[in-house]
Image 1 (cartoon, helix red, strand yellow):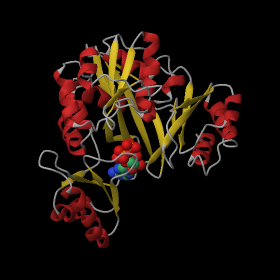
Image 2: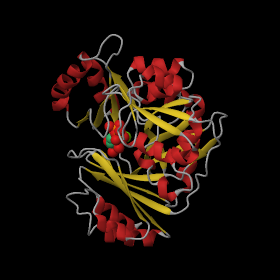
Image 3: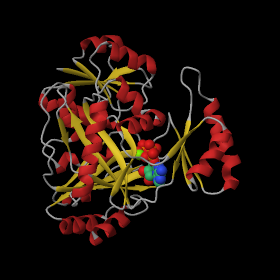
Length: 382
Ligand code: ATP
Ligand code: MG
């Protein structure tokens, strides 16, 4: 079976690696260069996008910011999963909030902003501090402002006005203000839905962000009560979107109550631990779902943590001396802060994991792996 993936980054690469044993043959479309290429080797093919769509049995995406013309072409083929509504919703925070309201899934109180009066109103009705985000752009905490005092309104508005003005009639730019949530921790749920509507959901992941970027995830803690909330939210949202594939939902955990932060209609960085932590990884389950195959086992196989590798030219070979430590490299040119790869660490118990992550900090220094020392300390206290 042939699968076309829109996007040629690490997520397409890992989907292709997971698809190969299932006899799924993957090509990727690089939206920047507009070329069809091999998702692992980067070899560029002469095939056009139109031809690749014809050749594909199923089409999917590794990201939600897909140009409209490309998305329309793919959707017109009736082979595109998870579907246009899901991609559009994941790429626009205003649509995301509308979906959450419609399905009665709780999120941070918010207000949409298209003019300065709305911002002033948001400060009054939501209170300070506010987190202000662009609705249509932004990732890894980019495209955001924090408003803590009335004195910042003018400056932030002038920056926001530039973003709003850069939109077009066909693709308007909007802003959303959210109440800053005093969360205890951030968690996410990753799950898959197949073409018949069956759902398979992974254990909840706890996530550490450093400067707005995910640095550390862990799965296998006892999350029983919040797992149920997350599973309910997942099922409601995936059913409403008639979703096919892997869907990720990020939440704030506020004293045991989950509020949705955002949804990602794709495989997600906070699900990379499933490669070692589960029998069937998020990448394999996404490929299974879009190929019309039965979903795989999402139960926890082993407690697993994931460490993101940001901006480093390689992963220190010494970490591979440890049992149950695996390296996942993306093959990208290094840039400061860029996601270059990740390290998965599995263990038989939380204590064992705490020991292993602690030992790894000797090889993964804090300047290069920000947040790891804190994550290691939290594990000891778990
Ligand atoms: P990514 O694509 O990496 O998930 P993003 O750019 O889409 O990030 P968000 O997930 O919305 O942005 O926000 C990034 C981080 O900022 C969150 O993980 C959280 O730590 C913090 N944050 C966002 N919104 C709020 C909020 N309303 N209250 C408190 N913290 C917030
Ligand atoms: Mg996020």
